[in-house]
Length: 521
Image 1: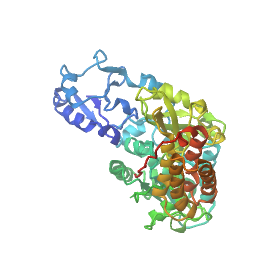
Image 2: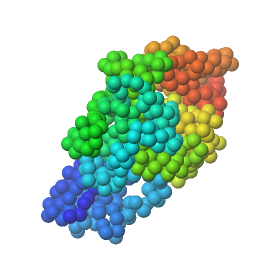
Image 3: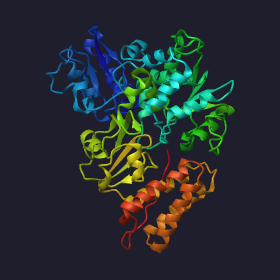
């Protein structure tokens, strides 16, 4: 029976994939039993959604932007083939996909997310099965040698963190997955949990074997109800199959995972605030030390990584540390799923080895601006990342190269702005975002961000600009070095980038007005 794939992830459903699937159920090819519908996850090429794919001897062929009204015509003569006018050809051969190096997202969009046989058929559980034959130290050594760094923003070496927890002497240890994906322009965590949820389960289980943990928690962003539904079903399937439970894959290892919904605050994406929220308290930042690796969830040693980090660990174990480290540049090893958004022609997830330039990513995969106007600024790393002018777009996308220009990769979110953007408004937005999302624990973040909004507004009104500029510089320094966590500490990054590269916007000619910025999740 021929399989027709219709994506079932949040992004595709938001543009009508459910309605297309419902219409297809009434098509003659389905009613007659000639074909069946599989609800896969999106491949991450969101400008093509809803992307309907059909199995053929040559590979899966695709039809982009299918609407309910298209269905009857598309299947009027049975299953359409590559000669159909709307056919894109074999999807895997399209340059946008063929040019990527997909490891973490290798199965995304290609499988039924809740089929264990699909998952195994494309390499799933190879890493865990290997991990089950290794002792804890060997697993940690493998992750350390691979050079895998946390994909959540801080880029801390995963092997060092795992080894700290492994060496801690405690009767109870935990694995916590940070899935509170709150950065604007990021959606890779959600897509992976909706399109390949067993990979996260596998990665967390590998971490549990490495450090001796028996319980794990996934802290999921509250605005992701569909991801919660799919991941919850995946957990049940994994328990029934013996992947989770008292005997992981038939071994003596015990491990299980509980899904918890987030508190709905940006700050809960910070690891210590996440722990507070997970313990049932208000999500506020804890001072460090002690480190969560030693005193984490409920005071026990805890590995906290994000979705993409645990997912990447499966490839490290499956392929071997040296093979994984062979991708990327210098200390930025492996691949990174970049997420293209904002004013971009072809938005979506593009996974590449570290080292590609931002310009190459924007032009070869992004296709330029959606508006057709020249791009002016690119923000990399979420709302706390720097705004980069065109002169910096040839910078290789690595942790080291971006740190050298006062920027960061963060979670891999890339948001494009064309030449109509008001960069002064963007600087004001950065401070307003921090003021709105601050947990209030420390003064530099709580008060500094509010004063920052006021200072930028005075700058834009040209009220003693020389003094306001100096105050803003000093305020940024105070927030950077005096804040308890990354929210307050990194908010100056986008502001400073506007001061350095787009200063004319902050100092408009006489008569320029201020724009009130409203923020919220």
